[in-house]
Amino acid sequence: MADKNFLSWVGFKGEESNASKTNLAAGSASLDRIRELESQLNDLRSRRDITGLSKEEFEILATETAMSIIRTAQQREAKANSSAEKVLNESKKLASSTLEQAEAKAKSLLTQAESRGRKYIEAAESDASDILSQANSEAEDLLTSKKREGGAITATAKREADRLILEASTEVSEYRNWLAGVISEAERLYRIQSQSLDSAENAISQSRARLESAFNRLAELQKQVVSAISPDGTPSADAKVAAKISAAKNGETKSAAKKAPGKKSATKKRR
Image 1 (cartoon, rainbow, N blue to C red):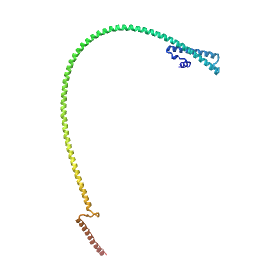
Image 2: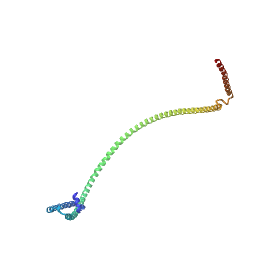
Image 3: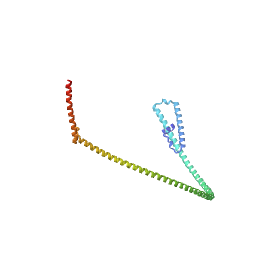
Image 4: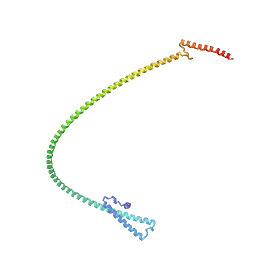
């Protein structure tokens, strides 16, 4: 990854080539150049300590080194492009010649295959006709036997179906009779319930009418009683009753008057 970053920094465009082998060759050449520059730097460091340089000298040295690296990388890139073009042209020529040879070989193989295919087809057709005739005879025999088996199975199934139909019809008739009995019983119970409900409804209506008439009579009697009694509790409408009540009051006053003198004489005797 560090090598790729360095190559992209110096302007090397080896990854844009179409041939991967050319990229590897250019990368190895760049690495060789870098190693050469490192050896030169080590040589320079042995001659003069690089840390003793000033900032301007170090920048100049770094710039010259970078420029030399860039020029070397560009030269390597140009060589790689030219070699890649050569390899590409040679590959195209080789591919075209190989393609022509392959086409010729394919045509010869195709003709051989067609001849062999015709032979195989003829042999297969003869075998297929034999197999077809044998299969037809076997199929006819099998069809005849299956027809006999099918007839026997059909007769057995028909007898079984007739038996099942008879049993089902018997069960259906029994169920129909049972259902008719259940329906008649339900109708009878419905009529009984309807009659009971009707009689209960009539009794309730009669009781309601009787209660209403009794309530009306009680209300009328209450009105009569209220109208017959005066505010002082004495009856106001019946003269006989009023006379009896007044006579009873007079008798009470007379008896009270008779009792009063007796009490006075008794007190005198005590004195």
